[in-house]
Image (cartoon, rainbow, N blue to C red; front, side):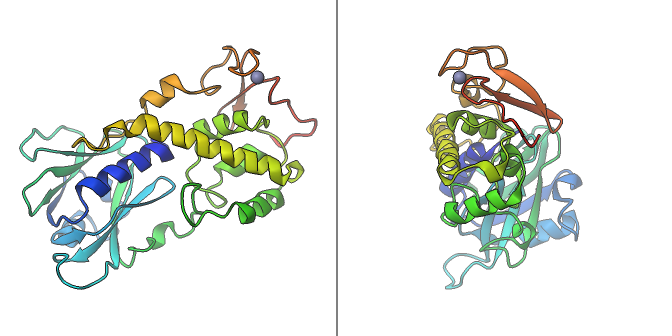
Length: 293
Ligand SMILES: [Zn+2]
């Protein structure tokens, strides 16, 4: 599943390759891809046609493209947006408009400049696109989602207070999109390992310094993943597949049960957690006496 750094790589690609261009057509090849667009696929196509994309924004794993009616020459400010979530397997691919259309292409955008087209492909169809009226600043559908750690609006001091008041396990707090968005299972485990915190630590027992160290860890793992995924920003293909080289090379504990902790050599442990797993070092991240599991 694409996590925040992969979605940020896609955002940067879109910023380079579609901002300033006007949509010539938006062909919906599978209605499920626009299921959140209440008025249906035909309305989505009609709404998107003729819009000029003025930016590429992200909050957590949501992307949105502020759009204007007509061309950008007219002196107006974008009010609306196209909203996208990549789900489990979504990709936004740019390329030669003449290339074959693969069976997993769900929506295809062409542009009036006849340049590279944009294809939303999604094998598992958990992703979606929608037209978001009034959504240029922040689409209403995602207004309830808290800022992510890479946003200017991210406020660590305020978040620290809210985390400590939540009285839950720290990993549950990290995954709670109403507290902080964009941190998935992989990055939560990696950041907790960096901060030497067990995932079940009760949030009210954490010091400000420990929470600060945790978000330093989040920033570090995001930065490393961006560096690993960001080498092809200037290529024409804006691609995300959730299996970037970062996952193979740089993970300390996630998916490495039984392998040595890179810091102390103890075998990494795996615990069941919310129908998934938590990976941690039994020495660097001691189990709390009274955890919130
Ligand atoms: Zn260790």
